Amino acid sequence: MECMHTRSDTAGLVELEERVRQDRQDLCQPAANWVPSRSCNGQKVVDIVVVGAGMCGLVAHHALIAGGMRNILHIDRSPEGREGPWVTFARMNTLRSPKNLTGPAFGHAALTFRAWFRAQYGEARWEALDKIDRPMWMEYLRWYRKVLDLPIQNGLELQRVTPEDGLLRVDLGGQAAPVLARKLVLATGRDGTGQPIVPRAFIGLSRQYWAHTAHDIDFAKLSGKRVAVIGVGSSAMDNAAEALEAGAAEVRLLARRSEMPTINKLMGIGSQGFTQGYQMLPDEWRWRMMRYSFVTQTPPPRSSTLRVSRHQNAAFHFGQTVEVARHSNDVVHLHLAGGASLETDFVILATGFTTDPMDRQELGAAAADIQLWQDVYTPPADEKHDGLGRFPYLNGDFSFRHRVKGQASWLSSVYCFNYGAAASLGKVSGDIPGISEGAALLANAIAATLYAEDICRHWQEMQDYSHPELAGDEWSATGLPSHVQRNINGSAVTETEPRHA
Image (cartoon, rainbow, N blue to C red; front, side, top):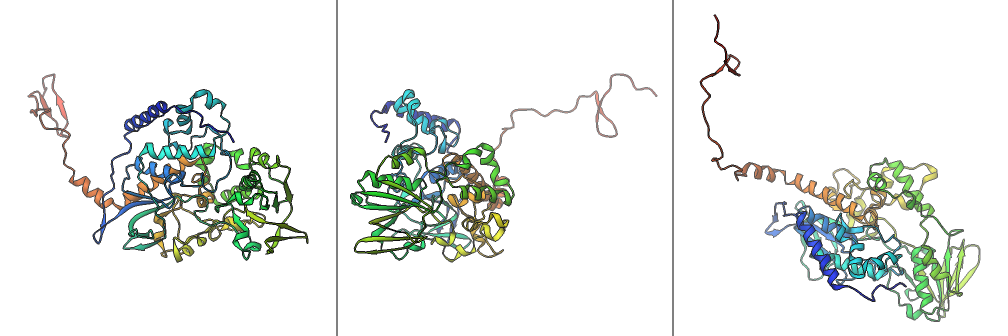
């Protein structure tokens, strides 16, 4: 793994931070709060609760305060510095995205990873860098939070949201008091509207014999063990490599597919047109494009695959589906379709995540009221895809739509700024390339909605506003000159010739 921590220029980083401060000042950011304050039964109302302080949550918060929405409660259940996947269940050596993407910079050159890296390590090191070291990306996000001075409360977890007095009651669990809020932003990442997929064959298997890639895994305990990894995507490669590097006796990757995917189709159409235009497409085109990317699948990076295949005790098995998994005498027996079987000591499920609001607990029974793509669009027979049908069918501002008119209409105040938005709005709420554009869309939409909801107060403020632009001493009033007359229409006429009878 490439390491970039051998030298850093503290003075360069201080200079960059001053540049960020000056740039924001020149742009009048963060803007003054313009949203009228509210209270309900003596309790102060929070305008916006943001859940999740990973990359999506950070840039969303930045976009909101840049737009003058400052009454925000931002929470994350993880300890400070461990938000998101980067130092928890992400296990790749480097990011998969190109190093020069601007990511969460939100239009500020000084907030890019490139600026942060160059300030510490110089231009030559930047030119030599291939891909961004994963832990270093987390260091950058920690700096991003610090330099923007984003107030975030760690150790708080969203338990449930319910409607109350025309607002949202946000229960945080533990000793934290419930919060009343007007808007709720779910910046909750890859599983933000779902959960890890556990294939049916493994549901009854004791948890001591398997883990999902999203779980904590003690790879040191796999030393000398036989490991089976279900899947051949990016997370499968990363976890297989971790097991091999920890000393696993063997690692076998089992894939249902008959061959390895090799082409990332979405890479072929990445552009500002796709970022901005996808959400404007009719349903049939959005469905067709997203389904095609799911069916063709995204291949793992070349470097991740080589990280596995360089080990002689690694094996790739295609066209293999586990139908039954059971254990006896500390051995896991995997019975495969077609009659073959495989013995192993531990199984890692690199099987991805569902996207289905019903798999989440935060919205309670109201999750069933969320409109899904399968409620709105029926694809042609050759384009069916059950998983895609369970994605929420969102409004253009990331907010949920209710399935039945007049029922659970409060869901439109909850914003799905996570992977669940992909089918409706494209890759603008989770992936590095389009995250700033997604945050701008989110913040602008929330600003417009808050303003419309407070229009009576804004109208009254407009009428009450009495600060004069002129003091009254800038001019003097005079009468018309004697040679100027008024005709019958009231317009001025200057006479230069005598009037004739």
